[in-house]
Image: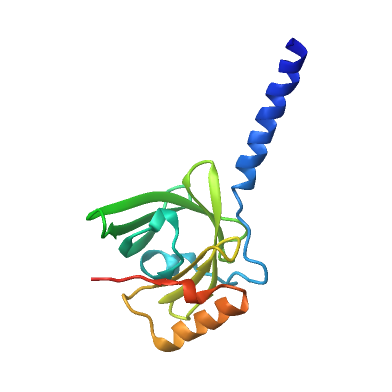
Length: 179
């Protein structure tokens, strides 16, 4: 019996560890490329969420914003906020983002529940850093962000075309309301 415990406990812990690590995917959607020559200082500040898929952690949220600011250690503070129109209350999550590679490549990992990290990849952004297309590690995660509550039609069409080419089902996007 003791031999079984000596094997079963470490084996169980190992399998559990592998499951945790597999949930921490900081990859990028197949076929996507993160923005090069990325200027993280220009990216900091407030963004409005324009569109997303229906994620459990954002269900029933409107007026969603993301504020990015620099932490003293060089990581980025992520403050997401939205209004739950069903529960009639504000919801806020604070996390941290770190660059996966160089600061000039828009590939980051973000965590709201350490030690679990997820991919956050800016794959398209306009020259003035006013509108951004962000994806995760698979075609399950996508966000369209803007510095304004609305996005220009030409940018919207560009982002949707790029997402469709990568295999995203853009017809499933939720277009976030902002009051």
